[in-house]
Amino acid sequence: MNRNRLFNLLAVLVMASLILTACSTPTPVEKIVEVTKNVEVTKEVEVIKEVKVTEAPAPKGPVTLVIWGEGITAGQLALDASADAKAQYAHMLVEGFQKENPDITVQFENHGWDEELRQNLVNAMLAGTGPDIIVGEGFFKNFAALGAMMPLQDIDLSNAIPGTYQGAELNGKVYGLASFTSVFGFERNCDVIAAAGLDCAKPPTTWDELLGQAEQINKAGAGNYYGYSLQGPAGFSMGSAFRLKVYLLQAGADMSKPDAETGLDYPYFNDPKAIPVYEFLRKLEKQSVPGLAFEPDEGKVYSQLFLGKSAYQMAGGWHVQWAKDTGCTNCQYSAIPLPPGGQAATVVVANVIYGILKTSKNPEAALKWIEYTQRDEVQALVFAANGRIPTTRTALEALRPSVDPATQAYIDLLLTGKNIQAMPQWVKNPQKVWQVYNDFLIKLFTTDTPVKELMDEAQAAAEEAVK
Image 1: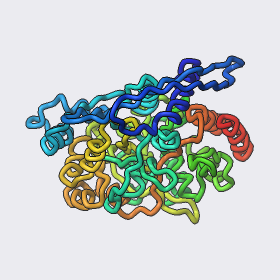
Image 2: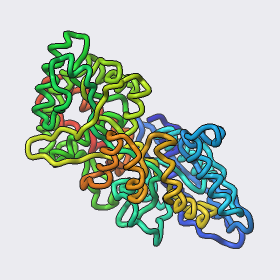
Image 3: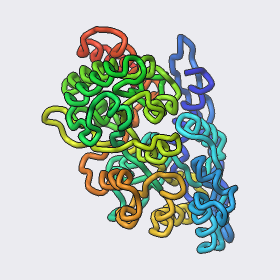
Image 4: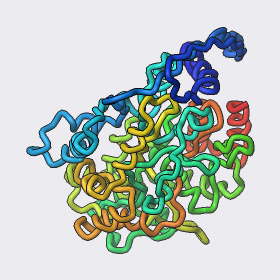
């Protein structure tokens, strides 16, 4: 991590703990706080000496609600909803909300996703220019732990699918709700499977069956096609970890456990139950398209199956349309194969959560927005807009009869799944922790070092990262 980024992160930690409990006051109040914080960074020291805090006055009359939204919806606002069905969701969100609340003007902005979004948010908070509402997937609990997020008091959660807001739930409080989501299922290219002499109508249901079929497909393909597409490590990217967590959960293992002090996620990279999982993945990687496990472009990894180069892969709900758009007319979907004695499990992905910053100038309007995203008429437009899946039970039940069997399978996972989880949000230094995990995966796939030895080494490095 470079010094500027560290400085920004440190400053926001300090500022959040001091000022993000701001309440409405009749007039602006400025506070000056002296803070000194020393952190070693490659034998250098950053010192934060002063933080200026300004509490904004409560607004009166018409308000502008500033929302940092995700890029697909932001881009669709520029399209004509009457001519483009995919844009109807975006226009319903903004125009429908404004029509219902004529005193509120929505300012919807795109500031990136994942690490780019996180960094832009940190910078905005440091500069005192943060929005009313933020969007995200993997950092809500971290900001909530800093006191930067407003809990959603008295909001009705009975219609929401629990796994979709798990990533915004901390110590019994919910700080955000998802507007749309997806989960992982299993995808296969029947043309490749048939070419290898296998029956695509009988997909593998166990890890042993998957490995056996992948080996047979590799042999039959003779370098023209392969048994599996495995996304591997790339920097501090979470793409591979998203999919591998599913296999861990199936075996009753995990990569994290709750931190007793904060409730955030503490690394647990040496869970003994994970040993057979990584041994299985090490074998599975050998049946994957050569070099694919180290391809940083996620699109290239998963399009191999659509192009007839691979037979099986873990797949999000949006893969159904992606496969069709790429020309795979014989892609089919089924449950993810299970280990011996394993349990069905999946992970939410592309899970877009809205939450309210404590520094929001318009918290009441912000809460109205979040509640509006959960409405049946709004949720009904999600699937047509971006191929993602609604997050409320009533919307899922209403959508199911009108979609293809593959999408129905993903909906059923959300409606009936009992082990739907979100990704970890590390107690400290998330980039460093994910880098440690990906370094572990590199060694897993490129060496013959015993798995337990690699896991213990990764755990030690992760513990050092969160000190």
